[in-house]
Image (cartoon, rainbow, N blue to C red):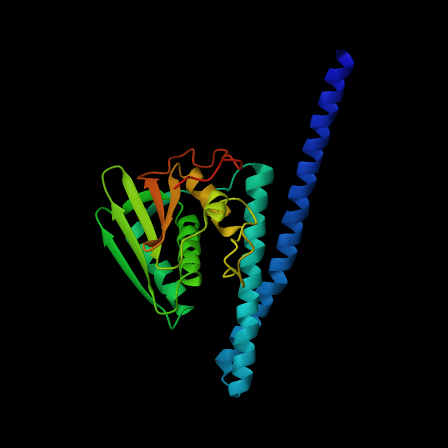
Amino acid sequence: ERAARAEAEAARDELHRRAEFDKQLIGIVSHDLRNPMNAIGIATSLLLKRGQLDEQGVRVVKRIMSSSDHAVRLIQDFLDFTQARVMGRIPMTPKPANIRELARQVFDEVLLTQPSRKGTIVHDGEADGMWDPDRLAQVIGNLLSNAFQHSPPSSTVCLTTRGDQDGVTIDVHNEGPPISPDDLARLFEPFERGTDGGASGRSIGLGLYISRQIIDAHRGTIEVRSVEGEGTRFRVWLPRSAGADSDALVSSSQSPVSN
């Protein structure tokens, strides 16, 4: 019995050492990668502002800028994934926020990347609460980007926020084909991108997983309904206040919300 206990303790220590190593390694790599990518972003912005490039040069610089932004977002996704899986949580910083203003800001930013697409935004009810606005912007941006990516170019993506006494609801609806039952069952798992062939570019299959961790940390819920003829609707519900303990551990092994 003593030998078995010692062996179990040694195994736990080894797991702890591995977790610490993974956390430090990815943290260092993420930091070292973000610095040069940020430098590229600054340099390309300066080139565009000088106005000395011909039309082809502008296109090339914009392509470099877009690729740099893409890489920075991927690095952030990996860092968030590491925090959720290794540290057991994604850090939250709740502060007073207005969901109407936050949703409008993210909506406008995403539409800038979708100049040929149509979108609508509606809000009703009380909009103020205590949340982490940067993290909620991350969630809304991810849901909107997915909605545009997986819906017909001629369709409209709708963002709706509603507030009541208990909290707020965020709906993102698109008119794309329904998500298959198999994909729906694992939609919020890491590195899942679906099998409809539409996931490309930015996505590495971490956005919805990270979004769920953020909503869990706010003590909210996220669920999806995807039906032929109705399109796909992601619905987020958040309590009016994330609370002081929103930095508490969140589970990284929960099963996705069923339809």
